[in-house]
Image (cartoon, rainbow, N blue to C red):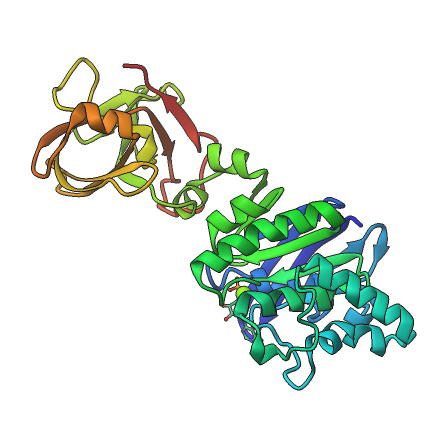
Length: 369
Ligand code: ADP
Ligand code: MG
């Protein structure tokens, strides 16, 4: 089931929650709607479900226009953040609920519920009540209940948002497996970029009621379309400077930027991810920033070094692999030199509006030492 969203606008009073949003959801894929709180993810999901109506635009399922069809006519399964299970019903009856509403025969209900209990790995717990399950188990029941009537589309609104980190991790993997097993078109709302990147085939990055970028997780991460996406996708060092004559100048750091060969200088923002930085104890050929070591955290798969840039007195976050860390043997207060391996430069329009970027946007500078 392919889904198409065309020019959807939704206004709450004077506030525009969705502004002319168009999107294609390929059949059988798991798509994540990713964005900060208030960006319009839930509104878009509810319009796709038929729980909410748009002011303008249309929604197509396959090739049929469902814009004016109610949720019950759309054959969708919906899972909310707060597992709205029926507390007075046991697990069996919770999963069976949608089937009884649709007047399935008892024998068929039983067959389907048993099948789903197996799928969510809760066989044997069907007589328990929701209060006798953990949060993660309850959310799996909510998923089984949504899947029971064999919907054509599965919609999940921050389904793991209320769970603790470890359970969330496990459920992510489990959801991915489940999706591969049943191959249903699924849309998953989250504000957590790590979750979106781990689970989804395709990520839709939203901001202030519009779509910033759509793509495969690797592509979005490697080629963020603009400064917002770059910023949103996890920790990044931001430098303000200018471009002129094929160079970008960020304080004492100056690197070639052939994408802007012009004479007139323009303000630019440069983004450097922590793992795109190397540090050294000595300055050498290439342009670098001098900094001081503030903190070192060696507990993760990468060593996190927090630096303070001596010139700007601003933090620079660096991630080194353990091997490089051993070579450098840094300690707090050491002076080091920062060498970016890759920089992304965005040049805002002269009016200073950061959302409007010109054709130079996202130009990546590869640096060789
Ligand atoms: P998200 O799911 O990305 O956090 P939502 O789609 O829930 O965002 O909301 C987008 C914006 O629309 C928010 O600013 C929210 O306050 C507003 N909004 C959502 N629903 C309503 C409503 N029923 N009435 C008024 N404003 C709403
Ligand atoms: Mg929401």
